[in-house]
Amino acid sequence: MQRLFNVSILLILQHARVVMELLRQDLPLFAAKDTTFTEDKIVEIQGLLGEAEQLPDEVVVDEQTGLTQQFLDLMKTGREHYEELSYFVRKAFKDKIVVQNILGRDTFSDAKRNQLAFIQFFRVLNEVQPKYEADLLTVGATPALLARTATLYQDIEKANTIQEVFKKQRVQKTANRIEKVNILYAALRDVEDLALIVHRDNFEMAKAYIVPRASRNTVVMEEIGSVIFPNTQTTAISSEYLDADSILQLSNLGVVPLRFYVTDQLLDVLPDNAVAVAAGDAINILSREISTGKYGLLIVANMSNDEGRYEAAMVD
Image (cartoon, rainbow, N blue to C red; front, top):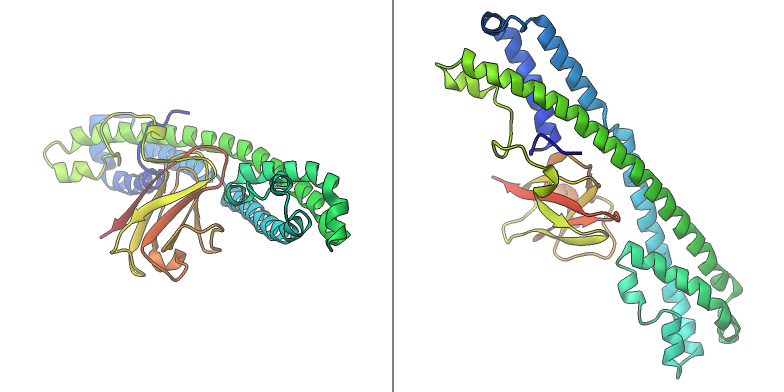
């Protein structure tokens, strides 16, 4: 879905509210230039605003965030399980590095940081582990520990499937919202065009009707902002001036949810207070609210399987 706007959806919605109030005051001036500008015009914009605000439902945003967190929790459980299992792998196959690697020793370090690699790791482990379970039991591994591998793998696959299905549904909801905001944006541009005529001798008044945009050209929103690849984290802001009182402006310019947090280094597991920013949304937030207690870096994380785009800045 091509966006007619190249700023955050929240700015468009806020502008629409302002325009309705201004139109109520200026309606006679507008009607004198264009007879279609009646009270119905305000009602029309109010209706378009209402439709644009309804999607996506905050419950949907929260649910997707919850699904992401569930998978992150599973990854934590899986890491802890394999760390315990690998103790017995090393013990059983001290002189057989090839077997240790077959059971994941050489790939675990990378797999534990990436959702897709993590799923594949447990898929392979679940397939090969049964061939070596007799040796693992001999050196002290419990049947419950070995059985846990299969259970975890099933949970991981199920969680991933649920997440993927929900993500595709959310993409459709996002596309629907973009369509609604596009319609609202076009209506606001019509008001802007007339405002430039009505207030041609008072540009300060006309400016209040100008729709927010980063440039005068219509662009594809997905071309704006920094890219973050699927299942990765990266530094969004690296600054010696980033401290507890820094005000951060975070914008999600893509179609997948992103999470942001403040710390002094990339973390394997996202902190609980990492803030989720839904596709198309933007927020301002104090650094301390999403900090691990350490400062210096703003980190953005994309835990989906699709590319994301974002902008991040410190507000003076």
